[in-house]
Length: 322
Image (tube, rainbow, N blue to C red; front, side, top):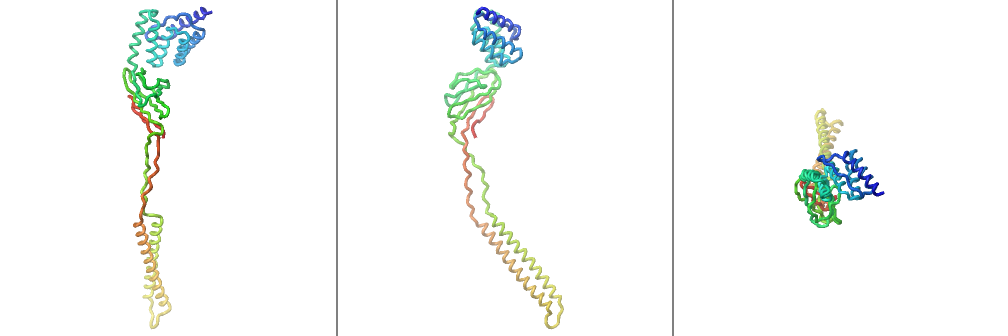
């Protein structure tokens, strides 16, 4: 039974030689026997997914087949798929392990071809150092756990990556950084305790005016009284003019007496309205301009959580809760 399964996996690997294009036309040799039927099925499924350009699915199947068999030749296929995914770290580490595990079983010219590809891919990898202000920070790179600080420098493929840092009791940080090949950047992560320090924001408060609603009412009433005085004064002048035109001999006629009475009434009314208007305006202005205005109470403080800073070669960002 074991020989039959081994023979099946060998046939599947033989198919791989004609399906998977390699980086430099190198082809992996057939793996030895000793695999399981599941490994053979996964290997075949990985080939099918590769043909469909489902590289991530193919990578999962090839890795699972390797876990089941530990056949070093499968690592060559893993490296090829990682290259298609532009995961240069995965490609280089897979090729290097392929050479280590295969050792003398790998033909010399195959070894040289793989080393050439490794040399070509290495400039596309950066050696990144992550530094945190507190120890025990869990880091993830592109949602893949990278370990807990302090960490040794990490190999990261050139390109954009999402870096996240978390620690219990601290605000989480997350930032997309851009890494250039062959660089050795240092990414500094500053975490702040949740609810620790705070940023105080005060709202601007418009100064309170001395003028109130009563001030404007007083001005309106005073203005209306003065306007009324002007109207009654005009009426008094009109009646006085009519009285001068009245011709009479001896005692005054009833018309002249009536006009004389109107003039007196209008003049008196005009004087009263004018006086009341002036007094109202003067009182309103005095009370308004001498009114003491209390300083406005400061706006309540708005408490926000402390901010964290993530600095990298692609820029810096401030992260926190609001």
